[in-house]
Image (tube, rainbow, N blue to C red; front, side, top):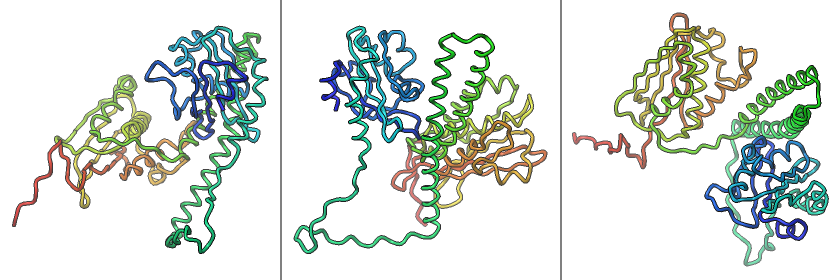
Length: 412
């Protein structure tokens, strides 16, 4: 497709992206032309956010974009930053549509200044239409099968076990969530992004007087807040993708405490820590677990008055065959009402005016995806305690305890 585009539009480098409404990003499908000189150049499979890429700009505005000076946009758009490093001078991004919705973009870049103009995008209309049709075609799951009785006929596969009723209900619920998320992404998020893009253009042109300008900016702030809530809902609905590696839990906690260090200092919060020596490690997604601890710390800060006490304890725990790493996070703030304790991990439950009720629900989801457990206890005079248990890391049934194998049992 890109080689065919070269006959219509000159370029030194070009690429096609696919728009993923659920992720709120575009993914690079293929790149043609001059290869990048840097290891961190764009690669197929790389994702670009809508706000931080020229491809995303074209998706949000639903129209082509031409830039004659990449030096002025390379600080704003990541894809332009890659081009600018390789001494490209101009670029054009054109969106294509699938079933009336933005399906992705095609980008042309040149080392020649002023190479592209907006009228050039019209000459690409036949190619853009063909690209949309190509991506619109469903991938057939039907495989040609040889006639019955022929020597090439494969033996019949054994019948799959009938799924249980709870599993069927879970699958139906996940399918319903997926359909609803897709609806929100295409029918709500896309129009919101388009509205915000138009408001950005109006405010950036400086044509409004002070009062209308202020009103539009206020509308922009409300719109951004709505987008943030919608993104949080869609992120919660997506399956988690974990990048697991062996980690020390205290290191993750310390990293999270660094993020909230300013808030802790401003609230004069006293933090005490008790980390058991020679702790087992855990195999987890470090970024996701840091998100868990950050959410718990921020909830604790909201519950505590200035000068409060936050206690963190990490220890070994054994409740079954294998040991766990137990994390206790306790604050001395206002306790959670008894009638709310059992609901705090439920999606969309919140007592905050501006909350979505997904913070602690996401925490529970992450912990359980790591095959862990989380519980909460709260009461007058004792504050609130969150307890997390994560499976200790071991390989092939042998413990890895600070690099040493567990000693064999003594003979009786």
